[in-house]
Length: 534
Image (cartoon, rainbow, N blue to C red; front, side, top):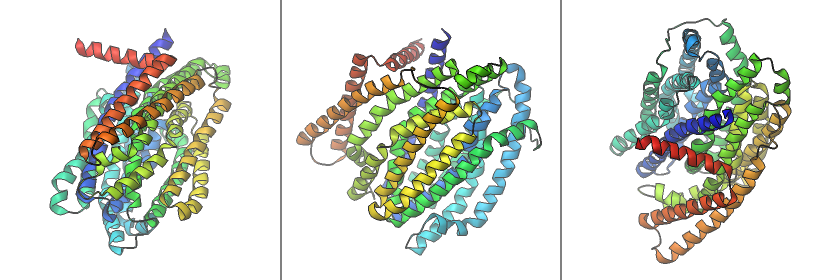
């Protein structure tokens, strides 16, 4: 009964996060479509894309990685209502220390932007180099509010309040869309996108504040407090890994800019489409299971069941396996669909205004290659989250460093021979290596996932996805013989019909093969529908 309740809670929490992610990803696509229509895939957009990546990278380094690795597990220890006052005190200490650190980073980035630009890009046009520096100085302000937003998200999630945090990215993207559509055509300057990004980060913080009801926050600074030291201890290995990861991003963007001024834009648009199902599924499931896994770990420690920690906690592993099965059930068909429908989907979303058919073809090429690493990336995040929940951050960090070394060893020679595709292939191999090492590491440190039905789910959903892909491809070929070549109507019909055929074929085969996660999803939809009806 407890296991059933955990499954329902997991599915419900994941559904909340996924709903927010759906809206966020849709707004992300609208954002990219608006930018493509107004500014195309020009070098200026590539400069903005690269500058935009800097605050996101620094955020992940300073706060984002800390949310799942240290903050949620730490806040979770004080999440009970009777400990709410303690939670407010602990949160105040961490908010104050992090806020001060972020202010210092903003100042350093603002002053050091001219020195950072040559490390990020090597455009042949000096004007693009200068533009990148200007954009860096604008987006630097957003780092402060991105960091505060991440802190608020961690606190809200530890309280099992997922609704408002789930919609922060949607608000962020909506701000950029508004600036692009309203000011972009008038100013014809990509700096309006950077301004929209900064405003969006402010709105992210404001949106989440109601989720902190019952928690009193005040400015407090005590770097010697035991909880602050605990968070630093947990996060130190992670930040080391993220520093190395940031260096990889620097190298990746630098190499991409050398393969052509539009390559960073093509790769960024393809990455957005690949990350849409990852955010809707893998991130949602990982976010939903982290508080549960942290709670199960705390219960093991409280009852002094050290032998279960060594041999593998059954409730812990069962919860993790349920999350992994759900990820596989939803990610495999998504990857297959993106592969088959890549060309008409990208044309439908982006090919208008200044975005040309050649841009669509190159973006589709990038997407098809990125899709090859999607499943590895999808299952990797829950595995990392599982070790974070057990307050093991050192080993995942070391795995991250090893995978980045692998990437650099592959990317440096391949980009010269294959250009943009070589960089994507190196990234896919990095994702695969990281995921496989995490599976091995989890078995050695927590317990084996054998016997949890993951292999069975992979086999069944893989078979269903393959048949689905053939059906979708047949649909697109058939429509191509009756529809006019090109045009929004033809692309929309191809994507819509192909998607519907794929959905029905996949669900039908999953039902025929008795994929267990289909029942979980069906039950969740039924409960949501019944509640809506009442």
